[in-house]
Image (cartoon, rainbow, N blue to C red):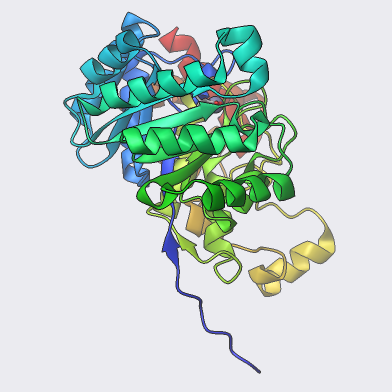
Length: 395
Ligand code: KIV
Ligand code: ZN
């Protein structure tokens, strides 16, 4: 048998925007305490950059970003700002105490946004982008520039804006598929075009930020990485505006599982994926669909007899990754009305929920009520109890 050697891998930076774009999911708003808790978990997960919010959006957002910036010990903290001095002042005010602060400024570049939203010419957009990057640069070295609706922008204009932003000092330029319109082959070609036609692109990191309106966000992100992008903007469970953003767990596990196809490394501690997913769903109240890749309740479940037989003989017959790799422990205790707090806590921990004593008490009471009516309480019951029970008490 020919043994293929593992190709040399490169690094992809993971920029998590669960707390900013993810929070833009309908019904997903989080209070400062919840954001701080999630930020701590994302640091444990190993994200490189955490976009903590949009400080100019509200006092609450400013406050949350600034507390997160002061709390995190190793992770870069970014604050979003439109391309205006007021927004950039707010963003800097909030992130300035982070160990590594980043200002992320953006302006739209597609003709449709220029005409109907901004009422600006292309020249005016370039001027505005340059001024914004230079102004942000007066506060910090670490400035990211995004071309909103980049995937629907004229390619040469996109390259012109990126080149101008890099000359003005942007260290990261981000190409968003803001409305989830791109198709993988097309998006890969666009990334390659930008790499080939932006003369100083090598002085910056090219990032991509995809939305999932056609269910293609992960595919577009992977194709873009293959074409040269080195920062991926993602959210836990893929939450975000409309159909959501690219999901962190899908991109990270695709890179992890297929190193020969895409030889890229991330800093993510994959065993922290499952607990992070549970925490996001518990805090936002947005349940994960059962068939969701990597973190759905059925992602490692086998129903068909042939599959069950195969998995018992060797799990790799029908599993392409080990559940433990993403932090899912399947050693199940049967829970019923005689079970105590310790068994419940241990089961919840295996399911990825790390609850405070107070939260456990709420869940335990509801668990006992259900166990009185039902012989065995299964994971799906606990998912509902945790999400509803804890949300209701924190309302
Ligand atoms: O989708 C988008 O274009 C954005 C930008 C602000 C990066 O979220
Ligand atoms: Zn977005």
